[in-house]
Length: 597
Ligand code: AMP
Image 1 (cartoon, rainbow, N blue to C red):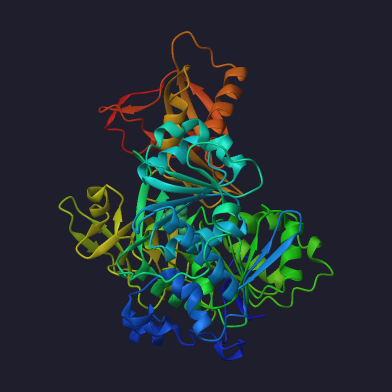
Image 2: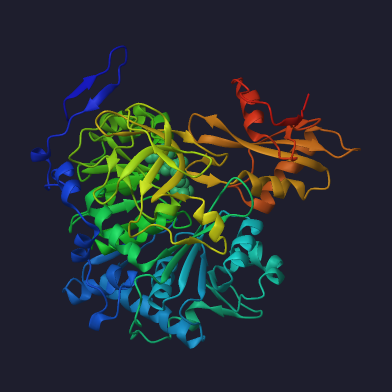
């Protein structure tokens, strides 16, 4: 498609040139630099309506009800494709009625604004309806990933004081029922499906929601009222609950246009699960706020199924992730032969580093490059992106969106920020505060929240470089969290689960590079006296972790060690475990107290 210049000694183009005038439809951001120079967040207010009669700002109103007022109620909002190929579609009017019913049902249960509604299920239509309904009821919503095991689910529900849980009978039995005593505040469990629902506070979706009133008036919603509570992982301690507010919808409305270039008649597919922040901000909110048809696919990744979806559903804008792209690359372009993918016009990727080969493979396979973009749970929306009208430098995350000021910085012991102006120098990626979708707190951990900010800058925890044209290049994490298949895993949560096993004395968990998943989780374990590091025990520990944590979080490999390297304060030195595993320099060992060798 676009002329590309090649960097010396490499087959890969250093730059994929874009001609904004040749793009159809004309991109929302025709001249990114000019828009960035004049854009202020107040401008984004023109993209939303606000609640009638000065009632404030509510995400669900902007995502759904607003379109009815603009005569767009008959357009398809969600098109759902089930695991066995069954399909259901909701117009904006139908989605408005369905989410009203859930909001009415919550009111009928006595659930109050501000209380928390958790959803735990695969990508079923009820998941999306429940989230929108709970937002209308002014509850804070937490979507949980259905591949989590009982432990991460119970931890998050307890931390978030879940009042209502919407799940399926099968997930409830397998993952929640056994830990219910840890959740005294959980008053209502709404089960989606036909299986019998007997037990305290258990209700069937069909009986509760289908019969509730489709008339619901959203109460006054302060733009600063909590809307979503997304859990993310840190290096130490419990997961962090990032608190977001309704005002975030301004960033979703703007970035849906600026970064994903969503236009009215787009058929858009975000492959992410709402259990991870991308699947909520860009699998639910942004596409609906922008008024497009959003396709939801229940099945997990399978290249043939995905190509079928792209072709049959006539997808025009596709937002996916590096691990999936690399899995498709492994199969080559053979499975694409004879397919008509001419509806595709824009491909984007997020969540982990997108290698240049993957960017360029998009061109070979689809005639379009993948556009990498960067953000994180805490930022609530896309911050840095390769937008349609900007040349792509494969391997770069792109440039900050209008309204976002990024920089590379360090901070000293006194908390002073030192911006690094020289291009090409590595430092921490920082963002100037505030922006509408910025997290407002870590739940019950205000001190931990405050540590992320200094002198008006938010410290992202990512290391990066900026080049002389203002493009940002991801270098790595500044901490020990692990990114596997796009999912952020806290080593502490995995270590804690391993320590529950009677044979384990110490556990240290790291990410090791993997050509497809980016990183995979690996554990090092020291056993208690009397236990042998046998193959049978290794398998038992892998099984134990999988049962407690779920497949998405559990380690894929375990090595036994006599001891683990520790600091004087007794902290396992994951950094050292990693350096040794990968044969890298061991770095500063001045804090090393006891070693494995
Ligand atoms: P999460 O909060 O789970 O969305 O994870 C956010 C983290 O994923 C970021 O802090 C980065 O470490 C990583 N990440 C997200 N997008 C990208 C990207 N485009 N390139 C490299 N890393 C990314």
